[in-house]
Structures are given as C-alpha cells and as structure tokens.
Length: 114
Image (cartoon, rainbow, N blue to C red; front, side):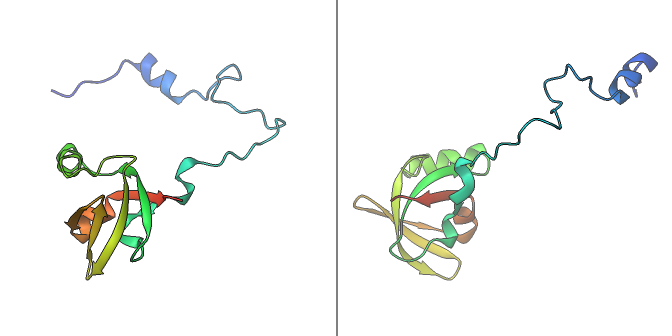
C-alpha cells in the first residue's frame, strides 16, 4: 500500500529555489531587525506575586483553550498573580480568584500589563 512519487516529482523537490522565488533573499540587501511581539512574553508560572499580566497566547489543545475560556482566561485578559505555592498559583481576574496547576500555568503565555 506504499505509494511512490513519480521520478519527476522527486526531482522537483530536490531543486534549489530560483532567484525569482520570493523566499530567496538578496545577500546585498540590507537586513532589518524586526522586533517580535513575543519578545517579552513568558509563561504565567514565571510571574511574581502581585504582578499584573495580560494573557498573550494560550499553548495547548482545544480542550485547554476551551477550559481556560470558560474560566474567563482568554487572550487579552488582564490578571494578577495572587499567590504562588509549589508549582501552582492563584490568579485574580476582577473579583474572581482562580487556582491553576503548574502545567496549565506553563501553557499560558503572558506579558506585562503595564
């Protein structure tokens, strides 16, 4: 049940991109450093007590994203770290406090809210 590519298709995969290919960069062109928006993001588990952060991205599967959204922890939400104990932590969103395990906190990327 193995399928093989025709020899022509294999040959086309091995050819280097042409100069007309937009992925090829000119060596003489000036290189511009672009600051990424993710440069200051870090896992929520690294935040200090009392630190105000904003959720930048949720890593993990659909189930985790759905669970966090149900708790009100979706992208763009501002939260503060209330307490850290062991690997887990307690965060506050408005008047609500939510306890998170260390594994879940590692999958929530945040940046400073200020």
